[in-house]
Length: 431
Image (cartoon, rainbow, N blue to C red; front, side, top):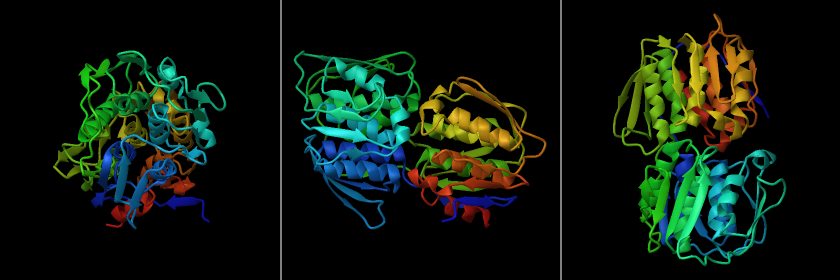
């Protein structure tokens, strides 16, 4: 098996491309469909490792699913939040969008289960979520180091108080709050969730609230500091749910169009997208690209001359990585700030990006929660380590537009969210 991919120098990138379904929406939709009574048909589902882990877990929990041959349509037979205790561990790989919500949902269930994953998952914190549930659910136990997976779950004893009040730290990952929001309706009592600390990645909470509403539940929300339910709500299947294209995955094609001049039309996302990473296009506009929004796609072109930006990108943490490599084609020093949560993702992304950018000759300053990138006069050819992180592989594909080209090690790492990324990318380069 060839474990490296060399991308030679290309000067143009133009055409149309469709991005696969959103990872965040796909895994949320599968879990919420399982929490409804009756069947839900989910279309444009992402076919990737993370989704496969969620599907396998749901099947082990007794949820019947029917997946189409191309794995992009799934019929989920919901059980109204009732699950069977699995006969084996629930292995969730490195899928945070499976581990965090399943932990919260199963904490309020009658199952005995063990949630496990890859070694990197055991380095990704889950303590804030477990702490928020500790006063209510004494049925969550760490299977290893305190504060991290794996987790052991025992049957839920129930809530004795009239109102369930939960407090969650929002400063490390929005997935903890998303997990609580998805699980809260299962209690069938009034619930109040209070956020302490600065809430990171707020657009992902908007995304969670939006999809929960599609499944019949609306939280009252006080400026993203408290979220309440009156206890009468229950999940209802929408019958059909179509997953939007992944806005984070769109960032690489949008950046390619901005760097080369384009035009590139990216389908699967549009002006009404519920995903926060759609705001990535505005950063490209700030760098000098010309962005046009349509119902079913976004179009980008430029004069091929981009300028550096200095911005807080806490609201688009995944897509912000793409700006770090786009910065190599911009005049000046680009500063991406308030991105501490890069450090608790699939790898320590701040350190990884800084290390690989230095390899190609960039001047890089890596702070605790920021990165500054100044491009070299000439980008150097390098073999880019991908750290078992899909987004690093895709970010550095943009160096095909540097005269030296680039070599990506372990390109198959994109299977986590975008298995055929390099095929779709190369088709744009062939125009």
